[in-house]
Amino acid sequence: MFKPSLLAAAITLTAVSAQAAETPSLEEMWQVIQQQQAEIKSLKSQLNQTETKLEQTEVKVAATADAVEQGVVGSESTAKMASWIEKTSIGGYGEHHFSHYSDNQQTDGKGGLKDLDDTVDAHRYVLYFGHQFSNDLRFFSEFELEHGIAGEDQPGEVELEQAYIEWDFAEKHSLQLGQFLVP
Image (spheres, rainbow, N blue to C red):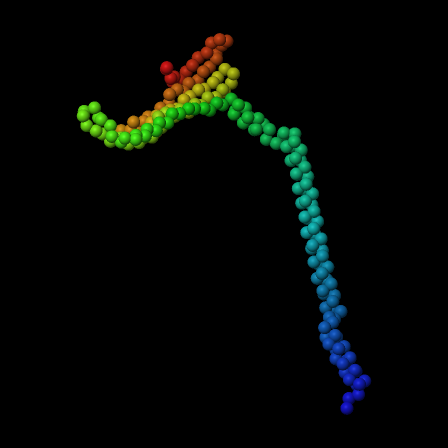
């Protein structure tokens, strides 16, 4: 029979030998420590680079905010664009006709009847464009589309009604050159 002390010694010996097999040697531990130190050094370097980039970004953001508040960013090009827009006029008008016939037949004037269809007509659309280049020089134009369809054997037309330059060459004297719409 087994004695209890012999059984306890066998269990202890088994546990110690299993634990000894799992514990790394000093050399293995040293290698693990060296790998961890290299990793820590690399991560510190990356952190320093990230912090430097963050500081540079913060400086740029602050400079941009200051420039925007002072109106420096794009102020010259923005002022030129605003000036051009203020000196330009765009406008127009139009006339659109719709004819609906409740009775689709009408006398043709010769004793017969003719069929009438509902019609839509873009009768007239005029686009106006003007620009003041300086206090003495201005441009005006009108472009017109009549009856919506223009082309060979079509009732419509597209025309440049007027396009002219007005020049004030002396006090109370001006010259107009171009194509005019005569009423």
